[in-house]
Length: 202
Image (cartoon, rainbow, N blue to C red):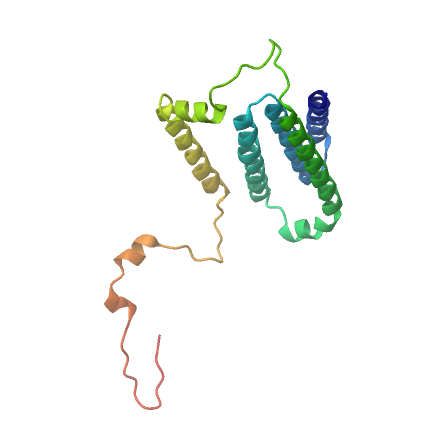
């Protein structure tokens, strides 16, 4: 009974938070609603026994949302002073959202201890080992090269995002690595012997 209640709770909040993500005009509110949607979707995965997908959704996607929000801030050149000034207006909404997530974790743990919900085809088959162990064995044996290629694609995307958001500033001298490597010690330090009462010309 508790599993069915938690399932409908998570499913309803996933749909509601997804709609609010699109409907919210404030980008900060949209990000918070999207994080709530990810947490509820992770709860649904947890109910059917896919704990690896639940952890992956929380760790990767919630972290990716934070990186995406930072990337948008960098691209739009948002005034950070104005963003900090509006923090006091957002903390009640964020605190309420944190309480909702905490309550969902509580209900999710209760449902997990009571047992996952049954699949559409009948009862869940008894697994010899957890799906995290099975997925790990597949990823690092049969699909090792595909896994490494996916990591390379993500690395290229991250470097591309850094290059796209990098701006040239006239008031900052860029670092010339090749000139620093070619610099000789005798060019870096110059011994001067000024006369008495004379200054040093640079």
